[in-house]
Amino acid sequence: MPPVQIRSLGPTDASQFRALRLQGLLECPTAFASSCDEERNLPSEMLATRLTETPDQVILGAFDASSLVGVVGLMRERHRKLAHKAFIWGMYVAPAFRRRGVGRQLLEGVLLRAEATPGLRQLNLGVNAGNQAAKSLYHSLGFRAFGLERGFMVVDGELQDEIHMTRTLGGGEPG
Image (cartoon, rainbow, N blue to C red; front, side, top):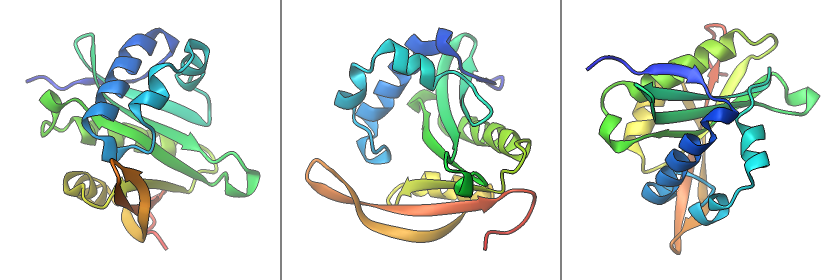
């Protein structure tokens, strides 16, 4: 199978992004802090803003031909004292494209963007403590756990723990 194409999303990708995001929120509710109910009726203007690439934010998409099959977001911290950091959010790959390297391609794309961003020194992310596949992928790309937040969120009445991970940019090891 040929590799997927990775590119930044824009407002013209809004309908495919919304559909894939809602699919992810329904399929994997423990992987996201947001819920399908919260995002289903997100105003189009807000979605367009989210999909507009800036020097401080981008959403990458993985495309199989013209179909969006995976996404990941990167957003720099907004406060000046925290602007040396960015966080990865919203990572999702459609089930039919898992175990084919799509998630790795998306994260490698994010890492390239982050490494090229002046002043950015660190990437952070959160992952459900029970998601072994995601934890292994992040670890293989240099992310290291630095904390566990018990009861990070509640899904269907059950507490979910989250592992906080970090990766230093520029080839350095996390502190």
